[in-house]
Length: 362
Image 1 (cartoon, rainbow, N blue to C red):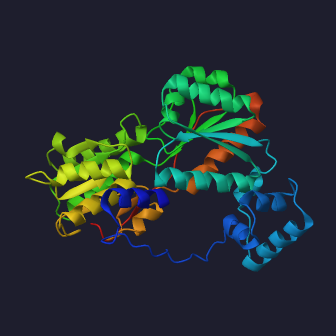
Image 2: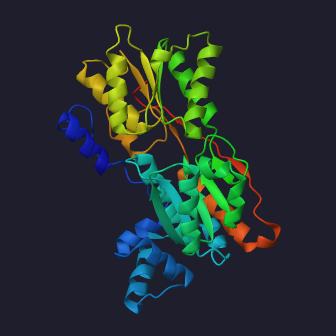
Image 3: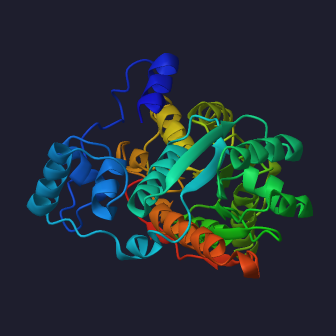
């Protein structure tokens, strides 16, 4: 969130017109491991070590953690507890080195799951998504002790479609891909159906000239979302105008440039379907500065339901990806594959339901 606000202020000055910096109401229905760590003044991994009886923890620290657990009524995640001692001690994670709220949210979810399982997480941010570069990063992680690998796009696509991945000799799972991949496990939502549902929502609200801001088209999730957008337009006999389909890079800055281009058109769109919340927030910024009413003049939608979706005005209608659930499913697959290596990792494709979150931007 801090990096997004820095970008806003750098390019457009203080965000007074639409960013709302109120905090989301606290959810007391489920106490998290992070909440315990905060109360005890320690890291999430330290809390995990106390719960699982692993690592070196001083008597004073252990007492503070146990006291925090009692005060908050924390109950460890049972699926994570089942993975403890399952054979995985270190997982390597490869993700893009980009300014992305979704990537940060996903990394946080994976870190919490890893901490609950007592698993060490080695995170490698990479800049080159080519196959050879990705294999080099993967080999380095395995060489430094990673027993399994977890990937985010586009590194999932790089490794997951090449049979040479078998030479790494570790199980691999990818989160948030656009489709199944032949050589690694995938845990994802149906991005195509989600984007189609979102496009149909704005059509139901009377929008007919609908633009789309995609992520990079070497990301399978970006391709799937564009396909869903086109599916909806075709089913409703609406034209697919190439001028309204702009490839971006999932960043706030790319959304600013694309929104400026679209809203400067003589026949501007009456709805913009953005490939993530970062770009949707950028569209709102440009729309407000152009004097447009949201959603009166323009409907705007996002994707992912990151914290940014409720920090803008109006709050974003978006698709919620259950990243914590996906992270837990990926960790369970990796643990099972390490625990039973004799059978070899069997790639699977797990599709988890998404949610449509309707707010004020449509």
